[in-house]
Length: 77
Image (cartoon, rainbow, N blue to C red; front, side, top):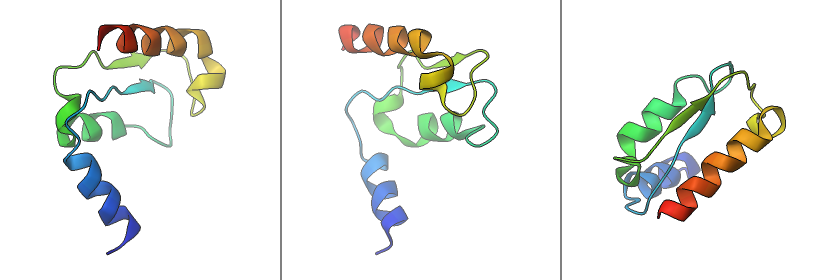
């Protein structure tokens, strides 16, 4: 089995809460948030977010905003 197949099988069976937080300006992962939200069961009903003005390295470009999203998510689960 290929590594990407293993990851796909793992994530498609992931029932625990799963949050996506992507940038609106990332040319590398654009659209991946929707694919993850649709394929990972634990992503259903979560408060997914898109952070404006960040790039591919969202944690560097908009670190404080991303941290707030993660803190709020952890506190709610």
